[in-house]
Amino acid sequence: MRTFSVLNGLSVISLKGGKEIGKVIDLLFQETHVEGLLIDKNGWLNSHLFVPLENIHAMGQDALVIDDVKMLSVYDKKQFPFYSLHNGTKKIVGKTLMSTEGEKLGLVEDVYFHENLGNIVGYEVTDGFIADLKEGKRVLKSTAPLTVGEEVIVIDLNC
Image 1: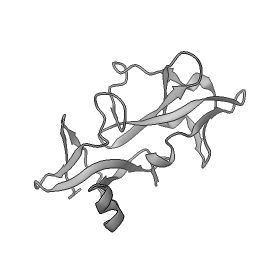
Image 2: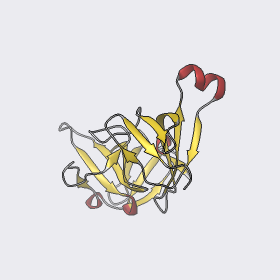
Image 3: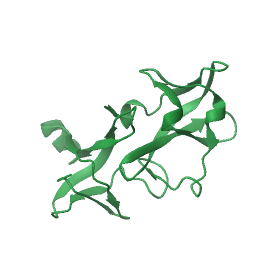
Image 4: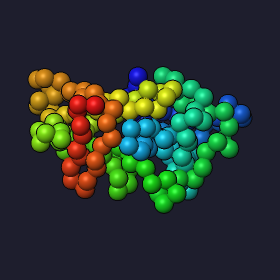
């Protein structure tokens, strides 16, 4: 099990050619499954690339490794209408997480997922800086799909 925060900012390396392609900047997912990662491409032109989870060779401590740069595609929001953690109109970090029973659970901070399967298994939530210092951040385990609105995210914790 892994969180996105440990991948954020990692270099992306291609085995074929041994080239650094860019840096990991976001996790893209649908419902309960991670689809892939968003890469900020190195170079003058600021463009983003999408790497599907199944095309990732390894997620190491210092780098994300792919076999070939040909496994990446230019990211287009219309072509890849996924939820994200940090970027775009469908981002979830910082939004209020509510249970289906009407309980405010906190603000979404991170996502826990199985790196090989891509299944999302939980969410890290915060009640704010002071509460995090006193009590720590909480991990809410759930495999249920999220209902993502503009201001609030609803989750069923009974799944």
